[in-house]
Amino acid sequence: MLIAVMRIFRKGNIAAVFVLGAICMIIYFCQYRPDLTNHNFSSRTLSDAFHDDNQSETVIKPYTHEFFVPKCEANMLVADMKDFSSLPDTIKNFLYYRHCRTFPLLLDLLDKCGGDNGSKEVFLLLVIKSSPLNYDRREVLRKTWARERLHNGVWIRRIFILGTSGSGYEKKKLNKLLEAEQEDFNDILQWDFDDTFHNLTLKQMLFYGWMERNCPNARFLLNSDDDVFAHTDNMIEYLQHLPDNDGSKHLFTGYLFLNEKVVRWKESKYFIPVQVQESNTYLPYCGGGGYLLSSYTALVIYKMSQSIPIHPIDDAYMGMCLAKAGLSPSSHIGVKTLGLNMPSKGADHLQPCYLRDLLLVHRFLPADLYLMWKEVHNPHLKCNP
Image 1 (cartoon, helix red, strand yellow):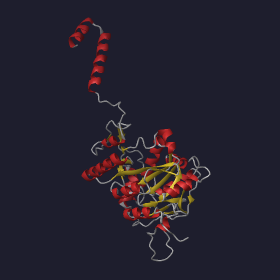
Image 2 (tube, helix red, strand yellow; image 1 turned 180 degrees about the vertical axis):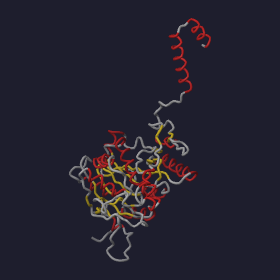
Image 3 (cartoon, rainbow, N blue to C red; image 1 turned 45 degrees about the horizontal axis):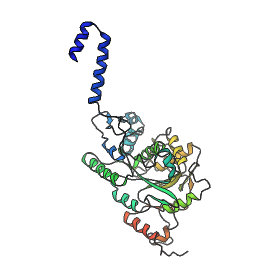
Image 4 (cartoon, rainbow, N blue to C red; image 1 turned 120 degrees about the vertical axis):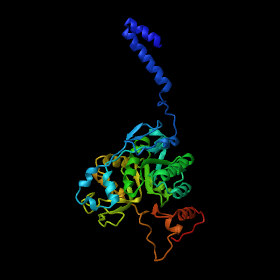
């Protein structure tokens, strides 16, 4: 081919040179260019995404929809805020990265809802906030209230939403554990951000964005932590008896907080400085341990969130988004995110009769949760009226 090109040059045939050059380029790309057109991949291959802390970009191997996701840099200008140096490190870090909204998806669930049409078959989607370390909690939930099943003729589906924990070897080890879980259960969404308390809001918004693209027609959602007892059978029956039970109307219900004060004590986990929120009272919201909402409301919240700065307290942030949309959360007597009010001092809260008619109770150890689920479903259980 080189000889042919030289002959062409001698003859001054410039057009032919361009043609030959184009042919050479085509041959090169066909032989050496990696195949980026094969989209026949499963959710399990998405963990091949990796992040190089020494680069300015997050590099995604060609299994995802995007090949380069810009690494979100800290906003150093926040350090100019008044009294910034006196804030706890956790709040400083939150403020540095508050603007970051896009992160690589490490584990995906492309077939969980079956696309636009298939998601209509999902009546109740369980969206469970978990941490990479909480393997024992996820295992118990898969065997109890979060088991995917058909109940009263409608489908319950399950998704755990997570970030990453640790660094170096520890982070790689935990990600390997999640890959193994994904192989067995196909129920994990994981993004490459630090899974911390102050990033729970980010986690929730990343999920709603995923839902808008992949599961827009699921009717209802339970948003919960992974340490709750959720009577999902009762939830199905409650939702089926709503006047409009197709998920197209507003619903956001749980344990309602009204006029809740913003915590200003620096030693508290829930501390919020005036640099994050100036007002001393939160808008109405439902406790983040667990609440029910319609898909309509979930997508409204996501839309509103695009113009509201992220807040470190995730349940309070949901209230802000609802208020901006002119919607309100409601109270449900069957949701106990602050635990049970026992009838007498010293009474054992591990009594199935207390749980039988409720929707959700917060804070259970995995072993206790497993036992209570079995007991509540014991056909011989006898309870006083």
